[in-house]
Length: 178
Image (cartoon, rainbow, N blue to C red):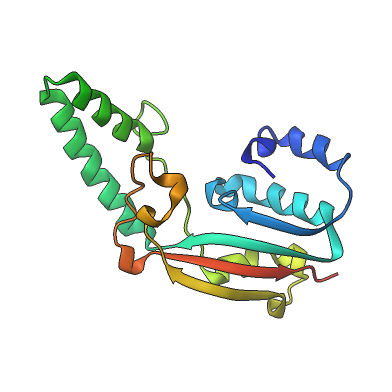
């Protein structure tokens, strides 16, 4: 499932009328990109298409959000100051790309994706699917993660996840509670 199918919300409803029940769902990068206000609809979509014995393989990031936001704010200030002083157009272009990577709007709101998720947050979010049974959510792997390890990120400005020692890729198996 592509992220584009989640916007606008009526697109989810249109899709669900044509999709049959599925045995498995793989989410790599969708949940972490959704705003908190969109997550309930995302879970409802999964509920609608997941077969009774269906499973979800979920890949999420876990890190310390406040440290990341502070790191991003510091880098933005540094880049904006350098941009104001640079006379080299290629560097100005690069700095603008970095700044725009983190700003959602011109009013200076910071882009907070990818969002971080703890096991408790995953358990609560997926309660409608697991029917509140925490045994239906299994952490399969938790590995230290670095943006330099991700082939999808090699040509984009870094997300500044602050500290590779405290950033993890967690992989969950979530079973339908029937």
